[in-house]
Amino acid sequence: MSDPSDEALALATRRGLPPEMLYLREEYPRDRWTALPEVAAFWLQMHAGFRGHQAHMDGLVSQWRAGGDIRDLHRQLIPALQSFLQHLDGHHRIESGQYFPMMRKIEPRIGAGIDLLDRDHDVIHGTLDTLFQSGLAFHQAMSSNAPDAADRAARLADTLDAGAPQLLRHLEDEEDIVIPLIHLRRDQIR
Image (cartoon, rainbow, N blue to C red):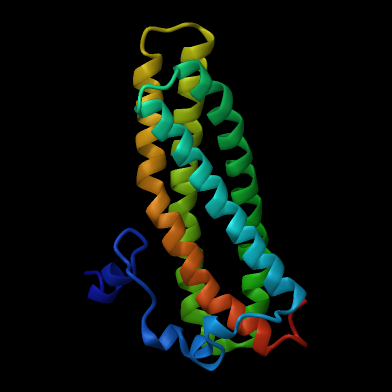
């Protein structure tokens, strides 16, 4: 039987982090995130890039849905999607493989939060795989002038729509755990 709190913390339904995972943010709240250590500033810059990339792809899809040319969508969205997938996958690999284990050692109380972020990565990677497959199907349909190219584009657009809220929730929650930790333990995290 699953723990009811597991459902409340699931990325698809989560509205934020529980108080026990926010104790470092209470010590160093967002409104004080100004003169950050280089690692924290870079982390936020990467996250801003993912948000911007997501917004760019959403805009391309919106233009197409509003009557734009499917060839323009294909020409712009496929390279944007490829770049997004590569960067996000690489970023998560570094976080889960290098930073999260180090952070867990530095601040053991943060373990439950790190576990949650790692579970988020698994969920997001499932979405990334679906995005890749949907993007590939759209690209192949366009390359072969297949009659179902518009349907393939719509499936890709729907997959982007479905994944965006989860990605944005994860980015915010990760920042609430990681940025205060980096700031407060700046001598140990580089």
